Image (cartoon, rainbow, N blue to C red; front, top):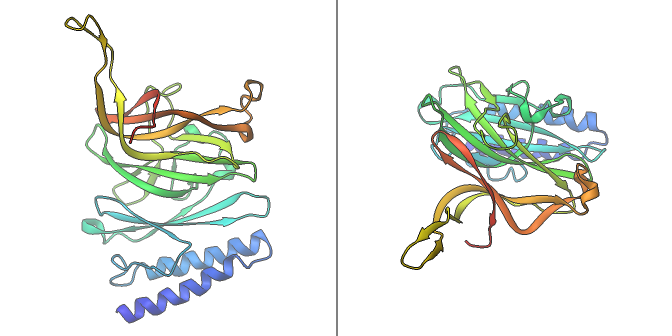
Length: 278
């Protein structure tokens, strides 16, 4: 079986090389769809869930920390500077009998992505690089996905996506777990900024200050720091206040960050803090 997987992997590698050699968007997208079909069939082979697929260098392979699924994720650069995204979900562990699911990118037809709830056929596409498991109030498993989206030549974005699964294994995207961020109605968080800049969006251990408390012994207010795992991200600002809302001019503010901490089945917003600490 290992020989068959290696042979299939080489065939997939050759097929992927052809995608970026396409002269037009329609050619590249058609070739990517063919690759997706071939890969989806390959993920049904015995042993594929544990196979590393190492030679598929331009396909991101992200496994959930609980071992229940893998994401195989790639992008097709378009002539206008944008991207179209592809993703296959392969189930593992106790739910490995579920068939792999292909996600269909509908990013260019979603008018309000921050409040959009989609499924596998109506996906707000991105390239994911981190999966963070958490639990909803009804004890259902959910996952935060951190990702990148090259919107255009001038604007890039990072996003915090929420993934859940229906009982039949169909992925659903978007969920209201950010109650105190902006209007509290965000189903996903999207940060847009100049493509020439870089933005940090990470899940990491951070030390943040607590609330000031009066210390009778010292006769002053003192603040106890606490270390927590959090989704930390750069605070974005326009290079000139008059350019507010024009995201191609947004860059990270130097040493200031924001974040979300998971508490009581939701991700609570932590406003600006000093992120220079490890």
